[in-house]
Amino acid sequence: MPLQRGKSKDTVSHNVKIETKHGKPHKQAVAIALNQARKSGAKIPKKSEK
Image 1 (cartoon, rainbow, N blue to C red):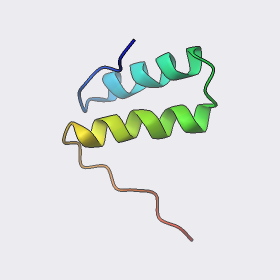
Image 2 (cartoon, rainbow, N blue to C red; image 1 turned 60 degrees about the vertical axis):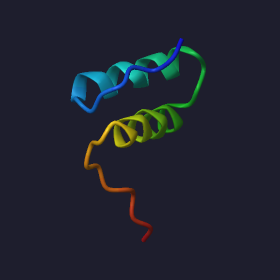
Image 3 (cartoon, rainbow, N blue to C red; image 1 turned 90 degrees about the horizontal axis):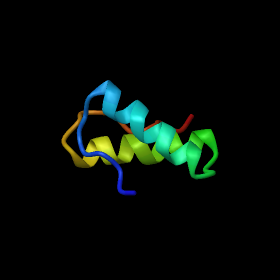
Image 4 (cartoon, rainbow, N blue to C red; image 1 turned 180 degrees about the horizontal axis):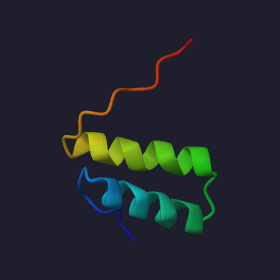
């Protein structure tokens, strides 16, 4: 099932739930969901390396 498009908090959390349900680790699921939100136009900065 494809991920939902959008940049709202509800859409991102829904996409995380979908990815974790399909067996992805939580951190990877969050990264995928945030990447989808960025593609939809959300202004989410990338994680900075320290």
